[in-house]
Amino acid sequence: MGETDVNRLAEDLRRSVGSFVRAIRQESGTQRSAQSETLDLLDRLGPMNVAELAERRGVTHQTMRIVVAQLQDAGLLTLEPDPSDRRSRLASVTSAGHCLLVEHRAARASYIAGLIQRRLSQDERDVLRVATVILDRLAAASHPE
Image (tube, rainbow, N blue to C red; front, side, top):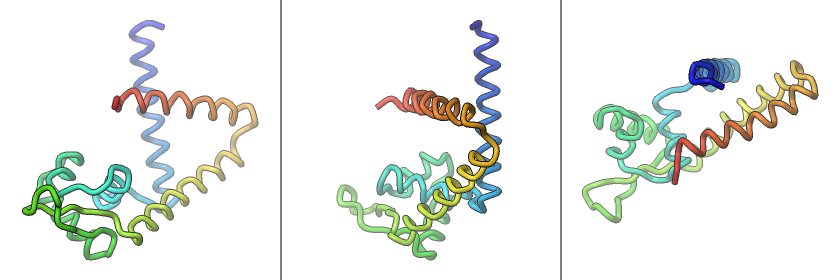
């Protein structure tokens, strides 16, 4: 496969995955927001201070402080003193925040399962199963540890 073909495949994959994710979020009622992305980041990576969150999300410190305050007011995260820096506080997902994430993930998975059940043949399901393994490999390669 030549470079042009690889670039075309990469663009097709980017477009398809993006469209799929947006459609699933829309149809499952779990739209993406600054709050949901911040909560998901904390759930996946663990407690962080506002500066770390802002850097990882690519937003200003002030913007992240507002998002964190909104999540805290909603009872979805807590702020505790950072043991390594007394001037800083670590944001952590509360049990209510974790439950909300689980509900949203389950809603998306359920919607996807319904689509698979209704729209895909057994052969297409087998191809999709292999494709998820390949996508996982690409994701792992983009985040070397």
